[in-house]
Image (cartoon, rainbow, N blue to C red; front, side, top):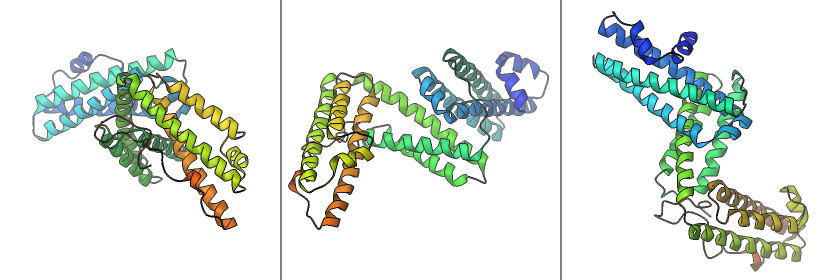
Length: 330
């Protein structure tokens, strides 16, 4: 079936119809639906191979590639409609939906291969359960980053939660039920593709004043960190030692790099620049408070006033705005 599906992806839909000419409407409908389902599996395998290779994904995760994921989702809907039509003995409807699905899958398959060729990306087969689990976990990490970026009031937030549910389900299927795990991963990737497209569109629509507001809030957190560091030094806390565990050389190095992120984000059209700031704020805020808490517990100290309280503005999306923020729940 795999070879047949591959061959049928490479020939025209009209040719498929011609091959099946002369059969009864019922047999013709069943066969075309089967062909469409086999083609869908082939395209899904290709998409999974891309997501299994983080280097390949980083190179080709363009608007065009994400658009192909959205089209793939439309093809899945056509297959679902085709099967529903078969169950209702609507053979013409089944043939129409399956034919449309096959056309979509053929276009997506060829388009992704063209993109891979344009970027000179080589991908290998995904056969190991551990590799599949790694892909799922990487996608869950991506969802967690997006949760910090997208306001719960945003129209796309529900899709993000659906994707998270699919990925959690995929992990539960492993190691014994690989096919169901792959199916859940496939559904999640379709949703994540749609979310990425939404974010890119939002980024293009964000007015400069909105981005400046984000950067202003980030600047407030920068000053908060500076006060926390100062209070930590006063309490005998090794600020530089802590920062080295976080990937920075010193307090000056962290402050310089954080300010550079803010400057780069000003006037950006890339939502990922804002996401990077939000992730840095979240991780530093959590890790610093935890380490300061442990230090104070060891030395019987109370928290100084310098690290208490949040800046006047939060870094989550504004309620009801539908715009993504730096994170939620802070």
